[in-house]
Length: 221
Image 1 (cartoon, rainbow, N blue to C red):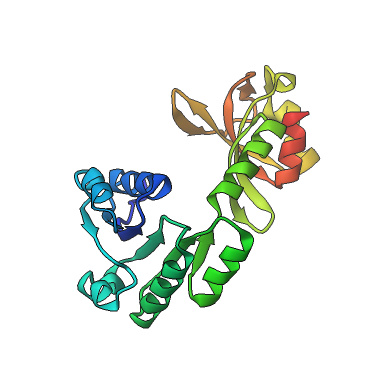
Image 2 (cartoon, rainbow, N blue to C red):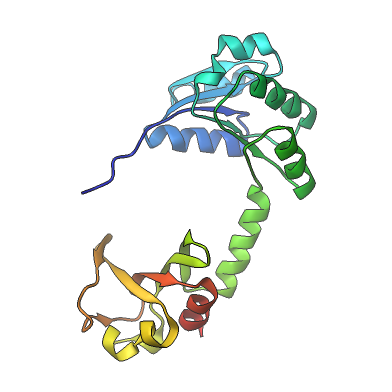
């Protein structure tokens, strides 16, 4: 049975490149997005793509109360400049008992500051992007990964040439390396692999569960 998505009420503050794209993508996925910026031009640019868009000063507690900011499931700062304003806004939001604040930072120091004043989570998109690019260049067969337990990852990989036309029983990946191939993409749909005689072809997209460093080593060498 397909898991039902729980749609959320989300406020995105700051409509620069990152904030704008985030707000639009969240709205496209069905969430009720309130987009906020001090620049009316940016507000007008996004208003037809989200649930609501407003021009507002998020350093004014009366404005935050009027927006009923505490009722949102997520408050996400799409900006990292104007640090003083962000700090003041987060401080006010904590007084209003908001549910969950996600900040955006450009540096590790900025991240620490935002966490100390009350942000529940702080992302470093530029650093994360740089790391993903470095990893993609170093491990070209690794496409996506998700940590599912301490040290265990669900990783989407391309089948390397060395595994071409070999079946799971022959490869013995679980026995040799403690990793499991659980799914295979077929016509853009993922299918569970239950038959050990299933053959892998060079370029196939599969889902693997195991330790990240082992998966990287096995599928990129």
